[in-house]
Image (tube, rainbow, N blue to C red; front, side, top):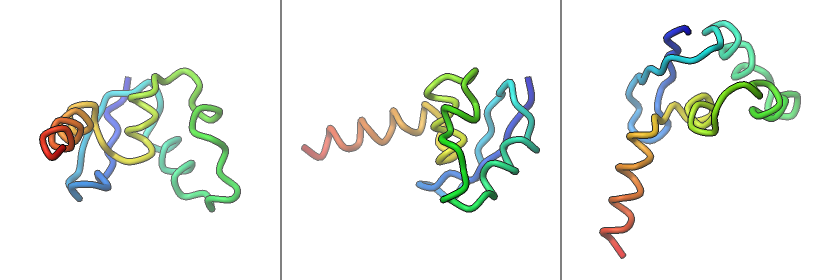
Amino acid sequence: MELIQRVCEFSGKLEEMELTVTQEEVDVWVNLPANERPYVQDQFPNLSADERAFILTGSTPEIWNDMMEFLEEED
């Protein structure tokens, strides 16, 4: 397990999550041109959907839950 860091697209804050990939693997994938980047589920098939969402957006499950609660309150 390695502590991976990503900037959250929603808050702009640096977030961290322990994943079974390296920071270098994530950085290489993130920095590929979008049209050359494999799908996150193909590049990191061993990760859960929450972990792949973190790689994509920098958002932890807690951030997603907070956003969903906020949206539900607005309805």
